[in-house]
Length: 284
Length: 327
Image (cartoon, rainbow over all chains, first blue to last red; front, top):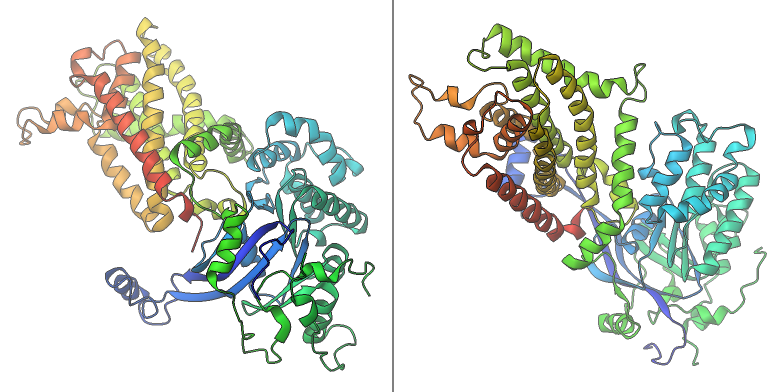
């Protein structure tokens, strides 16, 4: 089943047999990790395991293609490689084997690391915007929107206070507001929707839909099944680094919920995914 | 259960791969993956002009990207500087206090206890200039070493030319130095050093030193990213460098008669970049520090070191651009 050369859909992300492996230093057990370190330096290639370097095979031979206009959900239990895969798509992690091809530069929705708790919210808006590659003028013109969207000033003039004085909810809202202020080609969202109170969640879901219209493709990692259902029409299910299922949201979610013991589907026998039919690329 | 029925279930079939058709029933076995031939996906990507994610840009493109991020570099440096003392009661006063206290400690040890000041006119301006200028290079290199390894969160979350980090840290140190220089001017005037036209030379000297620092910081950033242990080693390297660069004493005195050191030692020590930039600044600011105390061809040396470190360090850093923040 080769793909049709005249498939009208435009691929935005092609993930081709990708493996991702983390190497963790300093896990040497027990006896003298100093000798282990020496060992590691002397025999770099062979002694990795003996010297306390552990390999974590986070993503194993995953392949898929996503197209323009798609919203793809990534689900799986904790530690199954979702965020890792997202970072690799963003080009922020190297792949061990395989290739990832993208249309333009996918961006992770997240600026947390660029922000500084000792600075005021106001300065962080500028710092975060610059870190995402916006110009000063762009930030200035969107500044009021960002602040209004975050709702930081609803209870007083908090935007001029250092961010470390914010409650965790307020901080999360401001971070999301800054991150969502930019338009992206391929947008990768990692659990962003779970922040804030109910009214803020609604606002952020609306914003995500807006971003999706502008972006070619949106990826969403979330443990919130509802936001996956609300946002995505296709879902990739990763389990232990392997792509366990890839298909329409409802089919995959049903399986996933049965797997995790959510809802009452637990007792139901796993329906054989009848995904076989949609599998065949339709002739255009 | 979904509020939105799937609009066109067919449109989905994402890949030629036989997808999850046969979702494995057993958790531990991977789904038998009839992975498509590699060339299929690669060809698909090529046909639509997709590029490999996270590949290193060409050098001119890299410079262009870096230039486009200049506002971020500036804002990040200023933010770091401001955040540094924001929890202290005295706040930004520490910007000036810290270098002054540093100079005071060195004066106590080298000026009073060890009598290094013998034979150096205007010893306090001599010492304080040396300490401030050296501190600029030292802290730039130290923070450069940690520029990538200490900011992995940032590197792993956002796209920007990674050289922005070491450069930004050096810029932060330059801003810090400007505070110190303000204090230095007051010290100079207090000790009766006259304002002179030669003070203008401080500016080109600082530009060259900044270029040199940024270059070395980029080299160290790449090494520190690969081998974080270097950050443990650097303080010792830097302290040795400080003692041989004439920060607290006149190098000429070191190899004077009876010292037992071969006479080529002094010229070599004086040609080392730290000593060159320190002596240039002393020459610019202190009237009793004369031109004959400078190494020969001092400006050529200063420019040469700056270009060598700046250009070399930049290219060296760029060569590993795609590997930062990984593994």
